[in-house]
Image (cartoon, rainbow, N blue to C red; front, side):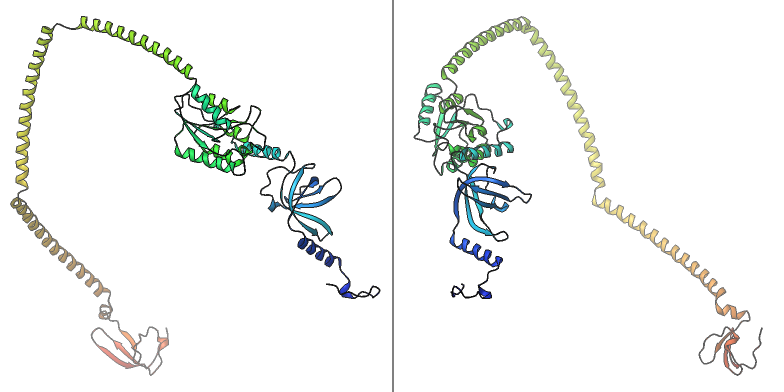
Length: 454
Protein backbone atom coordinates (compact mmCIF):
# COMPACT_ATOMS: atom_id res chain seq x y z
CA UNK A 1 0.00 0.00 0.00
CA UNK A 2 1.11 3.55 -0.70
CA UNK A 3 2.18 5.48 2.41
CA UNK A 4 0.11 8.55 3.45
CA UNK A 5 1.98 11.73 2.77
CA UNK A 6 1.32 15.44 2.82
CA UNK A 7 -1.05 16.78 0.21
CA UNK A 8 1.49 19.17 -1.21
CA UNK A 9 4.50 16.82 -0.89
CA UNK A 10 6.04 15.87 -4.24
CA UNK A 11 5.47 12.16 -5.21
CA UNK A 12 8.28 9.72 -4.81
CA UNK A 13 9.10 7.21 -7.57
CA UNK A 14 7.32 4.49 -5.54
CA UNK A 15 4.14 6.63 -5.54
CA UNK A 16 3.99 6.91 -9.31
CA UNK A 17 1.92 4.14 -11.04
CA UNK A 18 2.68 2.85 -14.49
CA UNK A 19 -0.41 2.08 -16.56
CA UNK A 20 0.52 -1.62 -16.49
CA UNK A 21 0.79 -1.61 -12.71
CA UNK A 22 -2.47 0.28 -12.31
CA UNK A 23 -4.45 -2.06 -14.59
CA UNK A 24 -2.90 -5.12 -12.94
CA UNK A 25 -3.82 -4.03 -9.42
CA UNK A 26 -7.33 -2.98 -10.50
CA UNK A 27 -7.88 -6.42 -12.11
CA UNK A 28 -6.71 -8.14 -8.91
CA UNK A 29 -8.99 -5.92 -6.83
CA UNK A 30 -12.03 -6.69 -9.01
CA UNK A 31 -11.39 -10.44 -8.93
CA UNK A 32 -10.98 -10.39 -5.12
CA UNK A 33 -14.03 -8.24 -4.38
CA UNK A 34 -16.52 -9.88 -6.80
CA UNK A 35 -17.29 -13.61 -6.58
CA UNK A 36 -18.75 -15.50 -9.54
CA UNK A 37 -22.04 -13.71 -10.32
CA UNK A 38 -25.12 -14.17 -12.51
CA UNK A 39 -26.08 -11.28 -14.78
CA UNK A 40 -29.00 -10.82 -17.14
CA UNK A 41 -28.93 -8.74 -20.28
CA UNK A 42 -29.38 -8.50 -24.04
CA UNK A 43 -26.59 -9.50 -26.44
CA UNK A 44 -25.30 -6.89 -28.87
CA UNK A 45 -22.13 -6.32 -30.96
CA UNK A 46 -21.60 -10.11 -31.17
CA UNK A 47 -18.27 -11.12 -32.77
CA UNK A 48 -17.35 -14.70 -33.72
CA UNK A 49 -13.70 -14.83 -34.87
CA UNK A 50 -12.07 -17.95 -36.36
CA UNK A 51 -10.59 -18.82 -32.95
CA UNK A 52 -14.03 -20.02 -31.81
CA UNK A 53 -14.21 -17.49 -28.93
CA UNK A 54 -17.28 -15.21 -28.65
CA UNK A 55 -17.03 -11.49 -27.84
CA UNK A 56 -20.13 -9.37 -27.25
CA UNK A 57 -21.76 -6.69 -25.12
CA UNK A 58 -24.47 -7.32 -22.53
CA UNK A 59 -26.77 -4.37 -22.05
CA UNK A 60 -29.97 -3.23 -20.37
CA UNK A 61 -31.88 0.00 -20.76
CA UNK A 62 -29.26 2.15 -19.00
CA UNK A 63 -25.83 0.48 -19.21
CA UNK A 64 -23.65 -2.11 -20.95
CA UNK A 65 -20.54 -4.21 -20.27
CA UNK A 66 -18.08 -6.06 -22.52
CA UNK A 67 -18.03 -9.86 -22.30
CA UNK A 68 -15.69 -12.67 -23.43
CA UNK A 69 -16.98 -16.25 -23.83
CA UNK A 70 -13.97 -18.49 -24.54
CA UNK A 71 -14.21 -21.68 -26.60
CA UNK A 72 -13.25 -24.04 -23.76
CA UNK A 73 -16.30 -22.82 -21.75
CA UNK A 74 -18.84 -23.53 -24.54
CA UNK A 75 -19.32 -27.31 -24.04
CA UNK A 76 -22.80 -26.93 -22.48
CA UNK A 77 -24.05 -24.26 -24.90
CA UNK A 78 -27.28 -25.71 -26.35
CA UNK A 79 -28.61 -22.75 -28.37
CA UNK A 80 -27.27 -20.27 -30.89
CA UNK A 81 -26.00 -16.90 -29.69
CA UNK A 82 -27.23 -13.90 -31.68
CA UNK A 83 -27.74 -10.18 -31.31
CA UNK A 84 -30.96 -9.23 -29.54
CA UNK A 85 -31.25 -12.42 -27.47
CA UNK A 86 -31.82 -11.93 -23.78
CA UNK A 87 -29.61 -14.26 -21.76
CA UNK A 88 -28.70 -15.20 -18.20
CA UNK A 89 -24.90 -15.53 -17.81
CA UNK A 90 -22.67 -16.88 -15.03
CA UNK A 91 -19.48 -14.78 -15.08
CA UNK A 92 -16.37 -13.57 -13.29
CA UNK A 93 -15.68 -9.83 -13.10
CA UNK A 94 -12.30 -8.82 -14.49
CA UNK A 95 -10.26 -6.27 -16.41
CA UNK A 96 -8.63 -6.60 -19.83
CA UNK A 97 -5.30 -5.04 -18.89
CA UNK A 98 -4.21 -4.41 -22.49
CA UNK A 99 -6.97 -1.83 -23.03
CA UNK A 100 -7.92 -1.06 -19.47
CA UNK A 101 -11.50 -2.23 -20.18
CA UNK A 102 -13.63 -3.67 -17.43
CA UNK A 103 -15.26 -6.91 -18.68
CA UNK A 104 -17.05 -10.15 -17.75
CA UNK A 105 -15.49 -13.58 -18.38
CA UNK A 106 -18.49 -15.84 -19.16
CA UNK A 107 -18.49 -19.30 -17.55
CA UNK A 108 -22.02 -20.42 -18.53
CA UNK A 109 -24.86 -18.94 -20.52
CA UNK A 110 -28.51 -19.83 -21.09
CA UNK A 111 -31.61 -18.15 -22.50
CA UNK A 112 -33.52 -15.89 -20.13
CA UNK A 113 -37.12 -14.86 -19.89
CA UNK A 114 -40.25 -16.52 -21.33
CA UNK A 115 -38.54 -17.70 -24.52
CA UNK A 116 -35.74 -19.64 -22.81
CA UNK A 117 -37.49 -22.99 -22.78
CA UNK A 118 -38.65 -22.62 -26.36
CA UNK A 119 -35.12 -21.81 -27.53
CA UNK A 120 -33.77 -24.83 -25.69
CA UNK A 121 -36.58 -26.96 -27.18
CA UNK A 122 -35.80 -25.82 -30.73
CA UNK A 123 -32.05 -26.35 -30.24
CA UNK A 124 -32.47 -29.94 -28.97
CA UNK A 125 -35.02 -30.73 -31.67
CA UNK A 126 -32.61 -29.55 -34.35
CA UNK A 127 -29.72 -31.53 -32.82
CA UNK A 128 -31.62 -34.82 -32.54
CA UNK A 129 -33.13 -34.43 -35.99
CA UNK A 130 -29.64 -34.01 -37.44
CA UNK A 131 -28.59 -37.25 -35.72
CA UNK A 132 -31.53 -39.12 -37.31
CA UNK A 133 -33.52 -39.88 -34.14
CA UNK A 134 -36.74 -38.72 -35.84
CA UNK A 135 -36.24 -40.63 -39.13
CA UNK A 136 -39.13 -42.80 -40.30
CA UNK A 137 -36.78 -45.70 -41.05
CA UNK A 138 -36.34 -46.18 -37.28
CA UNK A 139 -40.08 -46.32 -36.54
CA UNK A 140 -41.31 -49.77 -35.44
CA UNK A 141 -44.70 -51.26 -36.35
CA UNK A 142 -47.21 -51.84 -33.55
CA UNK A 143 -48.81 -55.26 -33.13
CA UNK A 144 -52.44 -55.42 -34.19
CA UNK A 145 -53.48 -57.46 -31.15
CA UNK A 146 -50.95 -56.91 -28.34
CA UNK A 147 -51.19 -59.29 -25.41
CA UNK A 148 -49.42 -57.12 -22.80
CA UNK A 149 -49.37 -53.29 -22.78
CA UNK A 150 -47.02 -51.29 -20.56
CA UNK A 151 -48.11 -47.83 -19.39
CA UNK A 152 -45.36 -45.42 -18.27
CA UNK A 153 -47.00 -42.53 -16.44
CA UNK A 154 -47.98 -41.13 -13.05
CA UNK A 155 -49.90 -43.67 -10.99
CA UNK A 156 -52.25 -40.97 -9.66
CA UNK A 157 -52.82 -38.73 -12.69
CA UNK A 158 -55.89 -38.32 -14.86
CA UNK A 159 -54.11 -39.96 -17.81
CA UNK A 160 -53.92 -43.40 -16.21
CA UNK A 161 -57.61 -43.27 -15.25
CA UNK A 162 -58.62 -42.39 -18.82
CA UNK A 163 -56.44 -45.15 -20.30
CA UNK A 164 -57.70 -47.84 -17.90
CA UNK A 165 -61.30 -46.86 -18.62
CA UNK A 166 -60.79 -47.05 -22.37
CA UNK A 167 -58.89 -50.33 -22.19
CA UNK A 168 -61.61 -51.91 -20.05
CA UNK A 169 -64.25 -50.85 -22.55
CA UNK A 170 -62.39 -51.52 -25.80
CA UNK A 171 -59.93 -54.34 -25.14
CA UNK A 172 -60.37 -56.14 -21.79
CA UNK A 173 -58.37 -59.13 -23.11
CA UNK A 174 -55.06 -57.26 -22.77
CA UNK A 175 -52.74 -57.53 -19.77
CA UNK A 176 -51.81 -54.09 -18.44
CA UNK A 177 -48.58 -53.29 -16.56
CA UNK A 178 -48.22 -49.83 -15.02
CA UNK A 179 -44.71 -48.40 -14.57
CA UNK A 180 -45.24 -45.41 -12.22
CA UNK A 181 -43.00 -42.37 -12.76
CA UNK A 182 -43.10 -38.67 -11.83
CA UNK A 183 -44.17 -36.70 -14.92
CA UNK A 184 -42.82 -33.32 -13.86
CA UNK A 185 -40.23 -31.95 -11.49
CA UNK A 186 -36.45 -31.89 -11.21
CA UNK A 187 -35.80 -35.66 -11.30
CA UNK A 188 -38.70 -36.61 -13.58
CA UNK A 189 -36.68 -36.90 -16.80
CA UNK A 190 -33.98 -39.14 -15.36
CA UNK A 191 -36.59 -41.36 -13.66
CA UNK A 192 -38.62 -41.69 -16.87
CA UNK A 193 -35.49 -42.63 -18.87
CA UNK A 194 -34.43 -45.17 -16.24
CA UNK A 195 -37.92 -46.72 -16.11
CA UNK A 196 -38.03 -47.08 -19.91
CA UNK A 197 -34.74 -49.00 -19.81
CA UNK A 198 -35.93 -51.22 -16.93
CA UNK A 199 -39.22 -52.00 -18.67
CA UNK A 200 -37.35 -52.88 -21.88
CA UNK A 201 -34.96 -55.15 -19.98
CA UNK A 202 -37.84 -57.00 -18.30
CA UNK A 203 -39.14 -57.85 -21.81
CA UNK A 204 -42.75 -58.42 -20.71
CA UNK A 205 -44.68 -56.02 -22.98
CA UNK A 206 -45.58 -55.92 -26.67
CA UNK A 207 -45.94 -52.11 -26.67
CA UNK A 208 -45.42 -49.16 -24.30
CA UNK A 209 -47.60 -46.07 -23.80
CA UNK A 210 -45.65 -43.02 -22.55
CA UNK A 211 -48.24 -40.55 -21.35
CA UNK A 212 -49.35 -37.72 -19.07
CA UNK A 213 -52.13 -35.14 -18.98
CA UNK A 214 -51.98 -31.59 -20.25
CA UNK A 215 -50.04 -28.66 -18.79
CA UNK A 216 -47.79 -25.74 -19.55
CA UNK A 217 -44.46 -26.00 -21.39
CA UNK A 218 -42.73 -26.08 -18.01
CA UNK A 219 -45.05 -28.88 -16.82
CA UNK A 220 -44.29 -31.00 -19.89
CA UNK A 221 -40.55 -30.26 -19.85
CA UNK A 222 -39.49 -33.70 -18.56
CA UNK A 223 -40.55 -35.11 -21.96
CA UNK A 224 -38.33 -32.53 -23.73
CA UNK A 225 -35.11 -33.74 -22.07
CA UNK A 226 -32.42 -35.39 -24.22
CA UNK A 227 -32.03 -38.31 -21.78
CA UNK A 228 -35.67 -39.32 -22.32
CA UNK A 229 -35.40 -39.01 -26.11
CA UNK A 230 -32.33 -41.26 -26.25
CA UNK A 231 -33.89 -43.84 -23.91
CA UNK A 232 -36.91 -44.07 -26.26
CA UNK A 233 -34.68 -44.39 -29.33
CA UNK A 234 -32.51 -47.14 -27.82
CA UNK A 235 -35.27 -49.68 -27.03
CA UNK A 236 -36.58 -52.40 -29.37
CA UNK A 237 -40.17 -52.52 -28.06
CA UNK A 238 -42.58 -50.19 -29.97
CA UNK A 239 -43.63 -47.15 -27.97
CA UNK A 240 -46.49 -44.71 -28.48
CA UNK A 241 -46.81 -41.28 -26.84
CA UNK A 242 -49.91 -39.51 -25.57
CA UNK A 243 -48.62 -36.37 -23.87
CA UNK A 244 -50.74 -33.36 -23.05
CA UNK A 245 -53.41 -32.00 -25.38
CA UNK A 246 -53.69 -32.19 -29.15
CA UNK A 247 -51.73 -28.94 -29.63
CA UNK A 248 -48.88 -29.99 -27.31
CA UNK A 249 -45.73 -31.36 -28.93
CA UNK A 250 -42.69 -32.62 -27.02
CA UNK A 251 -39.32 -33.97 -28.14
CA UNK A 252 -40.50 -37.44 -27.08
CA UNK A 253 -43.36 -37.20 -29.61
CA UNK A 254 -40.86 -36.96 -32.48
CA UNK A 255 -38.81 -39.97 -31.32
CA UNK A 256 -41.59 -42.46 -30.49
CA UNK A 257 -42.89 -44.90 -33.09
CA UNK A 258 -46.36 -43.33 -33.07
CA UNK A 259 -47.75 -40.10 -31.53
CA UNK A 260 -51.29 -39.81 -30.21
CA UNK A 261 -52.89 -36.44 -29.61
CA UNK A 262 -54.00 -37.30 -26.06
CA UNK A 263 -53.66 -40.13 -23.51
CA UNK A 264 -57.11 -41.39 -24.50
CA UNK A 265 -56.15 -41.42 -28.18
CA UNK A 266 -53.00 -43.40 -27.33
CA UNK A 267 -55.10 -46.04 -25.55
CA UNK A 268 -57.38 -46.32 -28.60
CA UNK A 269 -54.45 -46.64 -31.00
CA UNK A 270 -52.92 -49.64 -29.18
CA UNK A 271 -56.22 -51.40 -28.40
CA UNK A 272 -58.54 -52.88 -31.03
CA UNK A 273 -62.26 -52.47 -30.27
CA UNK A 274 -63.49 -55.71 -28.71
CA UNK A 275 -66.82 -55.33 -30.52
CA UNK A 276 -65.03 -55.14 -33.86
CA UNK A 277 -62.87 -58.11 -32.86
CA UNK A 278 -65.92 -60.17 -31.87
CA UNK A 279 -67.71 -59.29 -35.13
CA UNK A 280 -64.61 -60.30 -37.13
CA UNK A 281 -64.41 -63.56 -35.17
CA UNK A 282 -68.09 -64.31 -35.88
CA UNK A 283 -67.54 -63.60 -39.59
CA UNK A 284 -64.48 -65.79 -39.55
CA UNK A 285 -66.43 -68.54 -37.77
CA UNK A 286 -69.08 -68.45 -40.50
CA UNK A 287 -66.38 -68.65 -43.15
CA UNK A 288 -64.78 -71.63 -41.40
CA UNK A 289 -68.12 -73.44 -41.17
CA UNK A 290 -68.67 -72.91 -44.90
CA UNK A 291 -65.15 -74.09 -45.65
CA UNK A 292 -65.61 -77.20 -43.47
CA UNK A 293 -68.91 -78.10 -45.18
CA UNK A 294 -67.30 -77.67 -48.57
CA UNK A 295 -64.29 -79.78 -47.53
CA UNK A 296 -66.57 -82.57 -46.19
CA UNK A 297 -68.55 -82.51 -49.42
CA UNK A 298 -65.34 -82.70 -51.47
CA UNK A 299 -64.11 -85.65 -49.38
CA UNK A 300 -67.38 -87.52 -49.93
CA UNK A 301 -66.95 -87.03 -53.67
CA UNK A 302 -63.37 -88.27 -53.51
CA UNK A 303 -64.43 -91.37 -51.50
CA UNK A 304 -67.07 -92.26 -54.06
CA UNK A 305 -64.58 -91.87 -56.91
CA UNK A 306 -61.94 -93.98 -55.15
CA UNK A 307 -64.50 -96.65 -54.24
CA UNK A 308 -65.41 -97.04 -57.87
CA UNK A 309 -61.75 -97.34 -58.78
CA UNK A 310 -60.94 -99.99 -56.13
CA UNK A 311 -60.26 -103.50 -57.62
CA UNK A 312 -62.14 -106.70 -56.56
CA UNK A 313 -60.68 -108.40 -53.42
CA UNK A 314 -60.17 -111.76 -55.19
CA UNK A 315 -58.22 -110.14 -57.98
CA UNK A 316 -56.05 -108.25 -55.47
CA UNK A 317 -55.47 -111.55 -53.57
CA UNK A 318 -54.21 -113.34 -56.72
CA UNK A 319 -51.89 -110.43 -57.43
CA UNK A 320 -50.49 -110.62 -53.89
CA UNK A 321 -49.96 -114.43 -54.18
CA UNK A 322 -48.09 -113.94 -57.44
CA UNK A 323 -45.95 -111.16 -55.95
CA UNK A 324 -45.19 -113.44 -52.96
CA UNK A 325 -43.97 -116.23 -55.26
CA UNK A 326 -41.79 -113.80 -57.19
CA UNK A 327 -40.33 -112.46 -53.96
CA UNK A 328 -39.65 -116.05 -52.76
CA UNK A 329 -37.78 -117.00 -55.97
CA UNK A 330 -35.81 -113.77 -55.91
CA UNK A 331 -34.94 -114.26 -52.23
CA UNK A 332 -33.75 -117.87 -52.80
CA UNK A 333 -31.54 -116.72 -55.68
CA UNK A 334 -30.02 -113.95 -53.59
CA UNK A 335 -29.34 -116.35 -50.67
CA UNK A 336 -27.54 -118.87 -52.95
CA UNK A 337 -25.55 -116.04 -54.52
CA UNK A 338 -24.62 -114.75 -51.09
CA UNK A 339 -23.48 -118.23 -49.92
CA UNK A 340 -21.24 -118.64 -53.00
CA UNK A 341 -19.75 -115.21 -52.46
CA UNK A 342 -19.06 -115.97 -48.78
CA UNK A 343 -17.35 -119.27 -49.69
CA UNK A 344 -15.04 -117.47 -52.10
CA UNK A 345 -14.26 -114.86 -49.47
CA UNK A 346 -13.53 -117.64 -46.95
CA UNK A 347 -11.08 -119.37 -49.33
CA UNK A 348 -9.33 -116.11 -50.08
CA UNK A 349 -9.12 -115.26 -46.36
CA UNK A 350 -7.61 -118.69 -45.62
CA UNK A 351 -4.93 -118.11 -48.27
CA UNK A 352 -4.18 -114.69 -46.84
CA UNK A 353 -3.94 -116.10 -43.32
CA UNK A 354 -1.41 -118.71 -44.49
CA UNK A 355 0.71 -115.91 -45.89
CA UNK A 356 0.56 -114.20 -42.52
CA UNK A 357 1.87 -117.35 -40.70
CA UNK A 358 4.94 -116.34 -38.58
CA UNK A 359 7.01 -119.34 -39.84
CA UNK A 360 6.30 -118.39 -43.44
CA UNK A 361 7.16 -114.74 -42.83
CA UNK A 362 10.40 -115.61 -40.95
CA UNK A 363 11.52 -117.96 -43.77
CA UNK A 364 10.84 -115.22 -46.34
CA UNK A 365 12.81 -112.66 -44.30
CA UNK A 366 15.77 -115.07 -43.76
CA UNK A 367 16.04 -115.71 -47.50
CA UNK A 368 15.83 -111.99 -48.13
CA UNK A 369 18.62 -111.26 -45.59
CA UNK A 370 20.88 -113.98 -47.08
CA UNK A 371 20.37 -112.50 -50.52
CA UNK A 372 21.22 -109.05 -49.20
CA UNK A 373 24.36 -110.45 -47.50
CA UNK A 374 25.60 -111.98 -50.76
CA UNK A 375 24.88 -108.81 -52.70
CA UNK A 376 26.60 -106.66 -50.06
CA UNK A 377 29.69 -108.95 -49.97
CA UNK A 378 30.03 -108.84 -53.77
CA UNK A 379 29.60 -105.09 -53.76
CA UNK A 380 32.40 -104.68 -51.17
CA UNK A 381 34.81 -106.90 -53.14
CA UNK A 382 34.03 -104.99 -56.35
CA UNK A 383 34.51 -101.67 -54.54
CA UNK A 384 37.91 -102.76 -53.14
CA UNK A 385 39.07 -103.91 -56.64
CA UNK A 386 38.02 -100.60 -58.20
CA UNK A 387 39.74 -98.63 -55.43
CA UNK A 388 42.93 -100.69 -55.73
CA UNK A 389 43.12 -100.13 -59.51
CA UNK A 390 42.43 -96.42 -59.03
CA UNK A 391 45.26 -96.11 -56.44
CA UNK A 392 47.65 -97.98 -58.75
CA UNK A 393 46.89 -95.59 -61.62
CA UNK A 394 47.39 -92.57 -59.38
CA UNK A 395 50.70 -94.00 -58.08
CA UNK A 396 51.98 -94.48 -61.66
CA UNK A 397 51.00 -90.89 -62.50
CA UNK A 398 52.72 -89.52 -59.39
CA UNK A 399 55.91 -91.48 -60.11
CA UNK A 400 56.00 -90.26 -63.69
CA UNK A 401 55.72 -86.61 -62.71
CA UNK A 402 57.54 -86.71 -59.32
CA UNK A 403 61.02 -85.24 -58.73
CA UNK A 404 62.70 -88.67 -58.24
CA UNK A 405 61.71 -89.74 -61.73
CA UNK A 406 63.04 -86.45 -63.10
CA UNK A 407 66.37 -86.95 -61.35
CA UNK A 408 66.57 -90.39 -62.91
CA UNK A 409 66.69 -88.73 -66.31
CA UNK A 410 69.97 -86.90 -65.40
CA UNK A 411 68.69 -83.86 -63.57
CA UNK A 412 69.87 -82.66 -60.14
CA UNK A 413 68.45 -80.45 -57.34
CA UNK A 414 70.88 -77.76 -56.07
CA UNK A 415 70.28 -76.26 -52.64
CA UNK A 416 72.12 -73.84 -50.38
CA UNK A 417 74.31 -75.82 -47.99
CA UNK A 418 73.33 -73.77 -44.97
CA UNK A 419 69.70 -72.83 -45.59
CA UNK A 420 68.71 -75.87 -47.68
CA UNK A 421 66.80 -73.54 -50.01
CA UNK A 422 66.58 -74.60 -53.70
CA UNK A 423 68.77 -72.47 -55.95
CA UNK A 424 66.89 -71.71 -59.17
CA UNK A 425 69.13 -68.94 -60.56
CA UNK A 426 72.95 -68.51 -60.70
CA UNK A 427 72.46 -64.91 -59.61
CA UNK A 428 71.97 -66.25 -56.11
CA UNK A 429 75.47 -67.88 -56.09
CA UNK A 430 78.98 -66.59 -55.80
CA UNK A 431 82.40 -68.19 -56.19
CA UNK A 432 83.44 -70.17 -53.14
CA UNK A 433 79.82 -70.67 -51.89
CA UNK A 434 79.20 -74.21 -50.58
CA UNK A 435 76.25 -76.02 -52.17
CA UNK A 436 74.46 -79.38 -51.87
CA UNK A 437 73.56 -81.40 -54.99
CA UNK A 438 70.94 -84.17 -54.90
CA UNK A 439 71.11 -86.80 -57.70
CA UNK A 440 68.82 -89.74 -58.48
CA UNK A 441 70.57 -92.17 -56.15
CA UNK A 442 73.17 -90.05 -54.27
CA UNK A 443 73.97 -86.59 -52.89
CA UNK A 444 77.08 -84.37 -53.28
CA UNK A 445 78.45 -81.41 -51.27
CA UNK A 446 80.60 -79.10 -53.43
CA UNK A 447 81.96 -75.56 -53.75
CA UNK A 448 81.32 -73.09 -56.61
CA UNK A 449 84.55 -72.48 -58.55
CA UNK A 450 83.20 -70.44 -61.47
CA UNK A 451 79.87 -68.99 -62.62
CA UNK A 452 79.08 -68.97 -66.37
CA UNK A 453 76.82 -66.31 -67.80
CA UNK A 454 74.34 -67.28 -70.57
